[in-house]
Amino acid sequence: MDPGDLRADATPNDRVRAQPFGRRALIVGGVGAVAGAALSTGPGSFVDAAGVVSGSSYFVPVDPQRFCSTRERFGYTNRGDNTIRVPIGGVRSVPREAVAVALTLTGVNLVGRNWLSAYPAGTPWPGTSSSNSEAYGQAVANLVTVKLGTGGAIDVRSLYPSHVIVDVSGYYMAAPSAVSAGRLETVEPFRVMDTRSTGKPAAGATVAVDLSGRLPADAVAVVANVTAVQSAGGGFVTAYPLGQQLPLASNLNYRPGEVRAGAVMVKLGRTSGKFGFSLYTMASCHLVVDIAGYITGPSAQSSSDGLFVPIAPQRMLDTRTRGRRVWPGGTATFGLPGAMARQARAVAMNLTVTSSIGAGYFTPYAAQTPRRVVSALNVARPGQTIANHTFSKVSTAGVACFSQSGAHIIADVTGWYTGGPERASVGPPVDPPPPGGPIPWIIEIPRLGLTHWVFDGDADRIVDSGHTWHWTGTGLVGQGGNSVLFGHRTEHGGPYRNQHRIRGGDELIVHTSDQRRYTYRMVSEFVTSQYSNDILGATRRIGGETISLVSCSRTNRLPTSLQYRLITTFALVRWDDLG
Image (cartoon, rainbow, N blue to C red; front, side, top):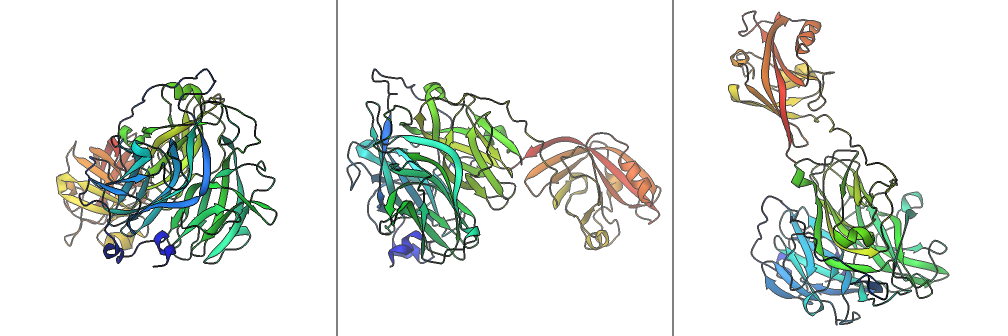
């Protein structure tokens, strides 16, 4: 098989090519495809006599190398419980003394929704995740920064059977004193490439990302976000040093038409007067590259700032625990524990969003500082679960994540960079209220034993088809006003034939298409004329957020006459976010 196929989406034939690790599914209560765990802070750090934070390390980039592939059955041992152990320290170009590693973790899913988690070997699974996939055969790659454990190895755990590929791009060595090379310098993110304005790379093309004059000339590696846009087919992107041969490694996988972002830490190289790195794309797609930082070279000033302190992965934010998603335009914030809060300049973390409300982007940044309009993670559709490794600056107020389109947000921190937090300079963000619940809805009226669809559009076509019409111009649930619904009451399938049997206190429940549930109780009933002004006037007699059910009626409330309308109004009791 062509080595490139290892980095593309899997096919059903992959089931018989090589056995995936693990046979027994893991059960993680109540969290679906995203792993979950409680926060543990661990011991605090301190500054030693050399002025270096205990546990600090510096980064050494390497040419991308494949350390493990369960498809080809090398580089791992099976630990059971859907867990494998991958030796890193002392293997190939990584010395035995390495304390942490930067790698691309690719999962080729053999079931439906799934997650992978990388963590130090020999330690309990911390309940965090490193990548997420949503469909059988989907290949998903993500950058992972992970502390090395027993024997210089990492453990990789999967919820369900999956193939796993590990490609190493660098490692961290202990820093007993200040150093010049190997420190992270964060920059205000800037876009260095967008082929949408220069021409779409063809399948099998390699493009040069020239950083000459944009970064110090002796920088040894760069931290970037690479996004594939408008891909013509399924494939992968590989980032590697300029002037080197294409390695057997990958950084990003995408499906046809998908917008997919992935972080990279890639060694820099030189060729033909250029300084930077190369991007190879298997299928034709546009490439967008945003620079977030770089690793200092040997001529940089010696310092103890920008060193990396690896930790066992810790879940520091999970909005699912509060029962409400972050709504479009909203922000979720988390503080840092112990010494990290006082000494961290930036954090390395896996950022996951799930139960997305719609397409949009997410931006982590230092809390209560001005936010730039940049993206670290992109969502393409409602209901998506997707992750990306990010490096976020830290402030005295912690770390924030802005949500353009809304979702649950999970942040799993794997380490931090020394230098001290930025001072919070603006007030906390004011989150907007949730938007009105989008239609179509499903309504339930227990008294009538009725479960029914509600649609916008042409009233006659909708109700004559046996559905309920959302009266054009009236409100959506969640907006604080009045929503009006209309349906038939005839003998032939009219859903509201028994509307007159509804009593005070009876419930009407609305399920929105973005997974919210609104519960109302009946508070009033009127009979009006057939005229819209009379009907809408009656629906507005009760203040607050209400929903009114309208159907044809006689004056005695029984079915049915075209001259009158029965109006039953329900007041909001509560709402729940089920996403």
